[in-house]
Length: 444
Ligand code: DCP
Ligand code: MG
Image (spheres, rainbow, N blue to C red):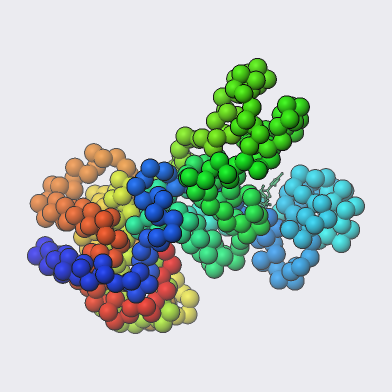
């Protein structure tokens, strides 16, 4: 415990100089909050919600997997003989007017050269899972709506990953880099606005709705962008001279009530961009994990241990922030030749204390290194077997030193929340940063 206290003190001593260093010279991979948008969100008056939707999902997967299809109009679902319906159309195919749910016969008429591909549902589901795992690196508050779309609540994540727009950009980049697919992203203070935003500039869209510009954002948009307004309701609005959301906003409330009865409140609120629904995860994230790919493979044990400690610290911090405890600790090691191994151990009690998780993680890595000395390309650390049951925490404090370790984590978290992710580092993390600063590419 004395060693940990010393490390913490060393981190605190470093704080002054770190606080003064410009963001881009700060420690690799731990982003400082970006000033542009965080100013607006920093006092947490607004939620930061992302809506992420993949572009032409099934078709994009097929195009990615078969480079021979590049530039061709690709249709997933249906057949050239005109049977069935279109599930997905690539943006190239959409130029001919082809879209999802269209009878294949019509699609063939519109574009006889279209390439029809049989859907591979299991494959899309597996990729959907990979996309979701990327989301979980940033927040556990993920509400999937379908295979290719989800809401993420990233409120309060800014000290760790940057503000909403920065997180949205990072997720877009990670999806492109790791999966070779394009996502459109909307960033806004609530779900409704985020969903409208993600759709607005598809494909490859990225739209931010600032909390103080909701009115000007919504004003010019078609009434059909309002949730619950289908073609029939749109016609009814048109009969009142309402084509845009701005015009809907002008409609007197009693007129709205007479015309739309119970739905009038819903339309009145959405016209003003009001939506209080929260992001509801359908299940708790199964694993909280972080991993790092090194730009140069590492074979030095101390350097690997230092990285592992840093990853463990990040995972511990995320667990604490979301009030989650984990019982199974796992590490992932990918060697130069892309061979990957995963080792895990289940602890006696669930924990979110960095020191406790670290003891198990370093043990796992040490046993891997005893038998395998190959250089390492990627290192990952994760915790699964998660629980949010606060009662389980009781067990943590049975041992006095664990209680202290936990208090130290809380103190360190508080400092980092105030001054940024890099403010407090453990001793060996600092050592490797000096050695490897700016070198490894960290995938957050
Ligand atoms: N899908 C389907 N049948 C539909 C609509 C969609 O099988 N009527 C499937 C295929 C889509 C996937 O769901 O690829 C995702 O649906 P989206 O509505 O998000 O459409 P896309 O992702 O294809 O296109 P985009 O989101 O770029 O408009
Ligand atoms: Mg989509």
